[in-house]
Image 1 (cartoon, rainbow, N blue to C red):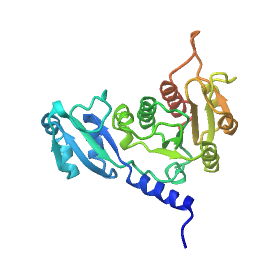
Image 2 (cartoon, helix red, strand yellow):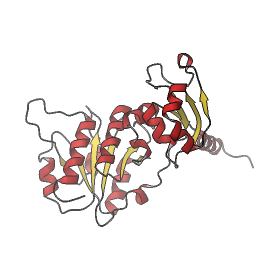
Image 3 (cartoon, rainbow, N blue to C red):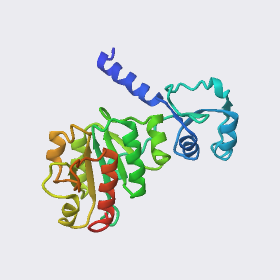
Image 4 (cartoon, one colour):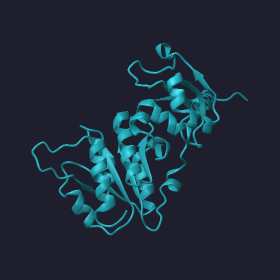
Length: 262
């Protein structure tokens, strides 16, 4: 019996996803990926100088490096990429399912959820902050969000290899799932009536999900409606607006060190 066209297309898409690779670049990002046993590493291009600097990581990974002329660095990178003489072809990381990755321990947990935050530099910076403040995961959608890329990895400065970055089909549904695990969903909204510190102080200690939207549009209606409460980061001046990655860092600090440990 011949398979329907939609079934064939779905199988092709699944095979393509499994074979998908990306190129990481920059000494720091490449080193951390080489040292990550969970990372599927395919091909390493380095200049002689970069090979010397990465010698220990290359040996640890058991990967054969391909030496290349710095004037003819032929990894398929964007022209403006600052590769520092090192590029590594890898498969995207598979962190597993939200229910397992974000399961609270001892009644505590902290998660960041991103609603249409598509700039890889912002997401990379958020991953760094999430790692610093002990977030269980950064969660974004499969569409309209920054995918795992070399630019994101370089901005994350190694955090991409250690900080779970989960891509999900539907953010609101994932928020509802986290609620069943005991998480309280706090949406960051500049027009909210209460400050984030007051909001955190008004609820008992427990797992918290911090939900941030893209700069400009902010949270979508369904995302906002799925939040348990909305809060804003107070501003002392008239400008009153933070870059989303800076807002995430402030919110993570407040949730971690504010009213009780999360």
